[in-house]
Amino acid sequence: MISSIIIQFDRQPHEFQPLETVSGTFRLVDMHLEDVNRIEFSVLWYTEGKGDEDLGVHYFETLDWTKPLSKTQVKMVSEEDFTSDSEQENSETRKPEIVNCVWAGDETPDGKKFHFTVRLPASPLSYYGKILKIHWVVRVRAFMKGGVREVKGERVFTVGHIPAVQVDLK
Image (cartoon, rainbow, N blue to C red; front, side):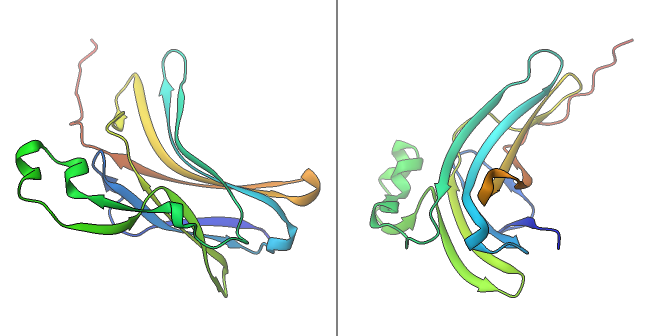
């Protein structure tokens, strides 16, 4: 049996704008929770290309799948938190929204399912240039008991839209 982690987003394509919410699920395939020491969930960006590579962790959580969703993880959010002043006057509705958290879902034939939702920051935007690239990923790591093994899953997504730049370097 080969253990794996499958990450899926709630929407297609995997393109998000700054300050939007990324949500989805991940499944631990061919892993028994009693064999797992801990699970780490993160949303992060990293650079690759010329020069020093960089990494920024936007959200990180070490999971305890034995606890239900905490009341502190549910907060009242209104559109005014993410709109301009003129748009605030027209928006008075408040709705409960789960922000920046991960919680255990159902057991499926394919493995234990978890849900996630994370509000993205304003920057950095994804960028795919010739010299520098900025990638955003959802990363899940499961550390097995005994410290012998780690199983990792990653799913790339895009934040913002920067047109491709064509430069003739002749």
